[in-house]
Length: 246
Image 1 (cartoon, rainbow, N blue to C red):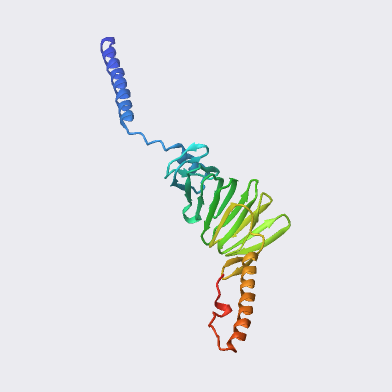
Image 2 (cartoon, one colour):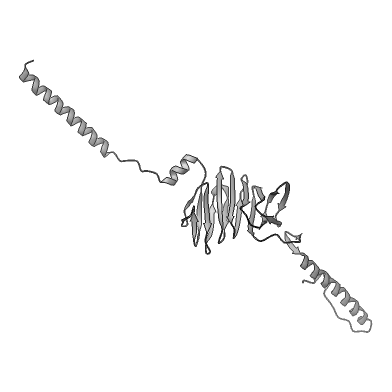
């Protein structure tokens, strides 16, 4: 091939190669990019752990940041309410956690377990569906554990007892509450009532028992007096002691 023929052919080949590179580059650039998932979604995907949704009113924070109703609560998150904050952490199949004002909790989640550590306490109510384990602790202070449904195992050092619905007990940093399914219980400020007796799922305090006893004695004495009066024809009907309500 002569030089005069070779040069135009080479130039044509180079021009075709350059044109091809730019053409394919433009095609690649025109392809739409996949949307970048938000940081929380990536975090959830990496850990593979369940998450909750925050619902409430007033001041609420997640990990110290102001949060609105609908915010995501990931495992390991700290959720707090202000003086006017009422919040519910909806955990779906893991149940829910309700926080009243001035309450801070650390929530750790796994596929069938919810661990709640209470850092500051106004009142916390936890509802647990069947098949889910709850482990609840308090980080300092004196509180009261109240069971309204199901059973809760209360461990304190070497001691362990079972609280049934309608029962309560002191709860502090050395205690741990364990529940397994179909349970509702609350941790609130203060200590358990010093003396209580179960009555149809409720409690009658020692003071109330004393009042009832005094009313019974008074009714009996009144009955004796009126019985004596009835012999002189001056009788009066009185309610039976069993119907007297203090």
